[in-house]
Image 1 (cartoon, rainbow, N blue to C red):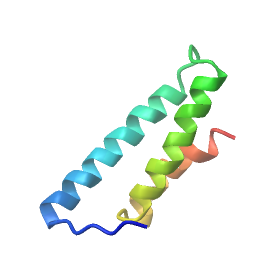
Image 2 (image 1 turned 90 degrees about the vertical axis):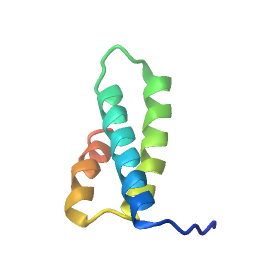
Image 3 (image 1 turned 30 degrees about the vertical axis):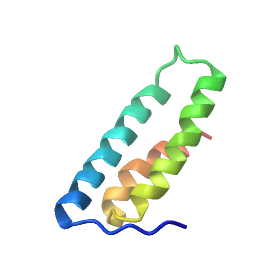
Image 4 (image 1 turned 180 degrees about the vertical axis):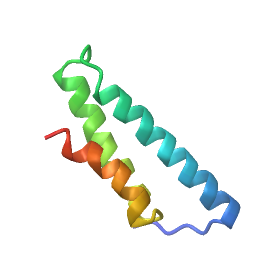
Length: 73
């Protein structure tokens, strides 16, 4: 495990970047033109980014992105 210290401003920026990445991946996962292996790779990455975001987000904010995990199974 790696520990890092961030300022409040850096935490807000990281929060923003993770949310934007999750939003983009949700869009990609809903694209019917993408085939199985590509969607599997995106889903795998989504789970990693989601776990990172879960460390800093409130349960209410996190619930928005948990839906993306449930819809992929």
